[in-house]
Every structure is written in C-alpha cells, then in structure tokens.
Amino acid sequence: MSQGSLVAFLSLVAFVAIALLAGVWATQPSDRRRWRTGIAAFGLAVWMGGTAGLALSGRLAVFDQIPPPAAFLFVALTAGTIVLAFSPAGRRLAHDIPLAILVGVQGFRVPLEVLLHRLHVEGVLPVQVTYAGWNFDIATGLLALALAAWLRRSRVARGWVIAWNVLGLVLVLIVVATAVLSLPTPFQQFTSEPSTAAIVTDVPLIWLPSILVQAAILGHLLVFRRIASRPPTERTVQTA
Image (cartoon, rainbow, N blue to C red; front, side, top):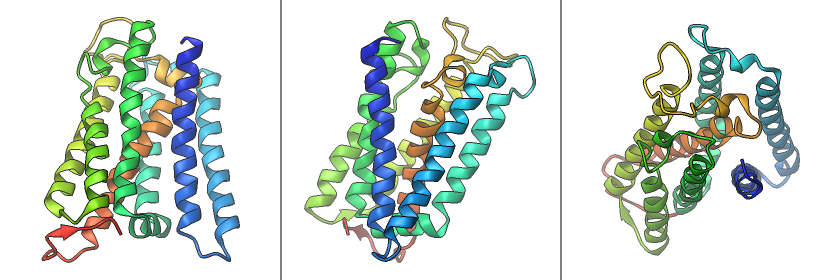
C-alpha cells in the first residue's frame, strides 16, 4: 500500500469512528454525555485494537481450516453490529439523529470505493472487489448523498428511503460475499491474484471488514429501525 493510500484509508477509518462517537455524544442526556461517549470510545478502541492484534498474531492467516478463523471473526463482528443496532444505544442513534445525517454519512462509501480501486492498481486487492469488477457499492454512496440532500429540503416518500436502504444493504453484502469467495480457502471461486487475504492479515486493512463494512451495515440497520418506528400509514418521512 502506498503512503497516499495508507493516509486515505486511515482518514476514512477516522471519519467513521468520529462520526459514531459524535452520534453517541449528540444523543445522550447532557449529564451522561461524557461518560457514555467515553465508554463508546473505549469499546471502539477495544474493537479496533482486538482485530488489529488478531491480524498481527497470524491467527487469521489460516485458510486451510474449514471454516477459516477469519469467518468466525466476521460473523462475531457482524453479530455485535446487529446487537448494537437494536440495543437502547442503537434506538437513540436511530431516532435522535436526523434521517438526512443517517443517510448522508453513508457517502463515505464513495471515497472508499475509489480507494479500493486504487489498491487494486497498486496490486494489493483483486479487481473483483472494486467497481471494475463485482463491487457496485459506489452507487450506494452517491445515492446516499443525493437522498440526504433531498431529505434536508423536504419530506420524502418513505418508499424511496426503503428502496435505497435495501439496495445499499444488498450491495454491501455482495461485496462481502465476493471478498470471502476471493480468499485462498477451499471455497475460493475468484482465483485472480492477489487474493483478498490482505484484508484479514494486514494492519490497517483488517479495519476494512471490521470497521468500514460494519459501519455500512450498522447505518442501514439504523435506517430500517427509524423507518419501522413510523406508522405504516405514514407515506413520507422527514429529516427530523
């Protein structure tokens, strides 16, 4: 990974981490804001440090085991994301943050996809996990920015928000499936080199599946929770 790509990647990770902590801060009562945000920051540090430590230890580099350790890690992280999304903290994030922000923050996927393509050019990742292959997730980010601008101006038919949210979740899951099928395991379907082993064996690339992908999934789940809290007869939604 070039120095420029490294700086860009770490900047995206920092943006997502700060956005999450800012969301926690903004949705807490003033008398509990500091310590709850501190707890969230500690939990995030443990999440990031733990996954980095596993990558550095070499335990995730075992690909001949069925299923590989990396699969257990991703399932555990995703389960944690789902628990967070449907926890009391997730309820506050879903209900108290303006919908335009919940949607718009997913715009981070635009520079992420540009960066993934750059990493392919640098020989770090295979083509199939970029927009030159089977990764169409850049559409989610572009549509998120457009939809967020629309939400800021006026009420929007809830069907449009649901359609974008379903599309975005499906596209990120396609990326995940493509990356998994590109790992050098007995189930590998994409054999172009390099494999996607670097995303589970390299620091900081381990934060792609453990932070950036999880942030995308969390964002979609929060939007679903926000929409589900509205009466079915309410055909439009607004930013607040």
